[in-house]
Length: 232
Ligand SMILES: [Zn+2]
View 1 (spheres, rainbow, N blue to C red):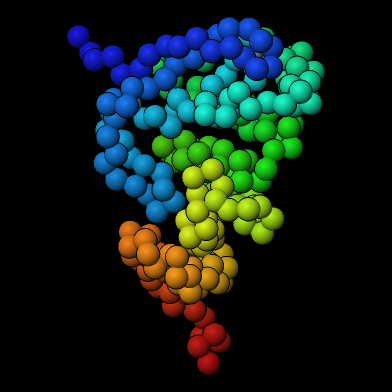
View 2 (cartoon, rainbow, N blue to C red; view 1 turned 135 degrees about the horizontal axis):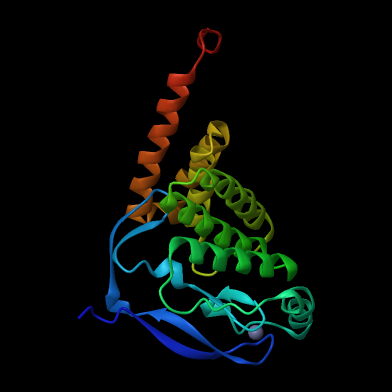
């Protein structure tokens, strides 16, 4: 018999106040095998990222499970009138596929946009959507990496750090790396430079070494792409 890796729990929706079944992942159901350069983990066992967004089956309100309850009266009204009023009953409990997780994340993104949430929260959601597209082998990954980049850059300039669990060095690194991944080599150079001049970043050996590896790729790309005119 397969071990029970996921389990159901009853949650009260803060938007419509009805109960629904949400699915969570047991902590011992997965192990991190490795990590991509933008922090997307590769898991053995169940992928917990697929289950991080709860969706109310009655009204369509969706959000990260650790912030699911955080809906103020004004936001509640927005969700009720602009999501709940049009929602057709659908449950996202039980085992999730990449496609059903993607739907859940897109609903969460839509709710955050309607609520005019902080750029850092929308950025986090877009980055996870990019990862799911990557796991599907879908080119739309790039579009969502660009959205995440734009929003993290905006958040870095206008919000107080840390965002959720992301401190300043991790945010600067991510902006640098997303610029590199989306082909903005000059911007990537600028942000890696900012990271390398941060004493706080130097304290984190893993991040420091990773940043140097990725910065080397920027330098290699720039040399590879240099035209004769650039070299004169
Ligand atoms: Zn609801």
